[in-house]
Length: 259
Image 1 (cartoon, rainbow, N blue to C red):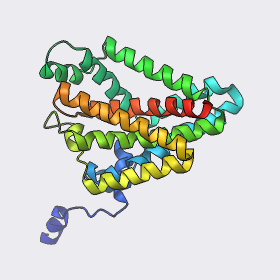
Image 2 (image 1 turned 180 degrees about the horizontal axis):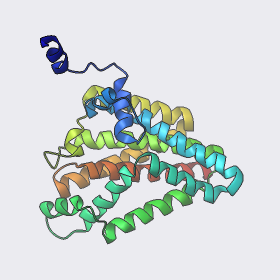
Image 3 (image 1 turned 90 degrees about the vertical axis):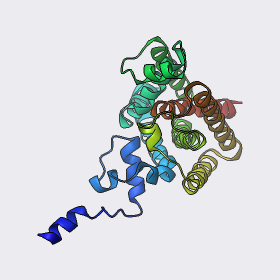
Image 4 (image 1 turned 120 degrees about the vertical axis):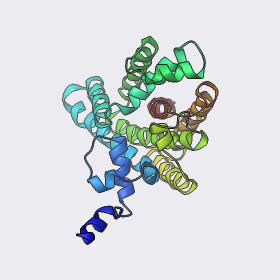
């Protein structure tokens, strides 16, 4: 009897690769083993770019395959839908809430209250429409192979940008996803190496460097915004950073490849 009680009180032992599963559990709706999903979110931080690349590969695959039947524009819309569904609209929700908070009149407390409201206001709706239009217009301009490469790199770098955002800001609240994600130095270095290698290997030296620069700019601006307007990061600002970085990388790659 005592042995059984001791077994129940023993902490679950996580395998090294459970950090990857924890990242999948947080960033996607993909089901993962319960033990891995229970891992500390921060344990999966280093894997964020890898999970992002997988998300981009899924969306890019939809763009390539459906494009054979319905054309580039409709295929891009389907790819965007796949991107939103596989992530559970996590980042789009953050973008909308952050935009509503930015548009709210009042100080830090008022903005945080608006961002916690489950309803979407005018600014949030506008931000979502702008994000969708920019993503579709940009990715539809690529050929199938370039669209796949752009989405893989954009989604990987966007999750890296969120890690930079988290590492450079303090939580604006004591609870929520913003407080739960703590990015250590080792995890950030590993994630940075993975994201940079992916961008340069998939896009080439100059386009990859431009994509990295675009995501870095988004990360830096998001840090400044969060510090000045909210006093720190929240789960919503992390999501907004991902969504904006995705579009920014795609737009920059379009300019470089067509330049």
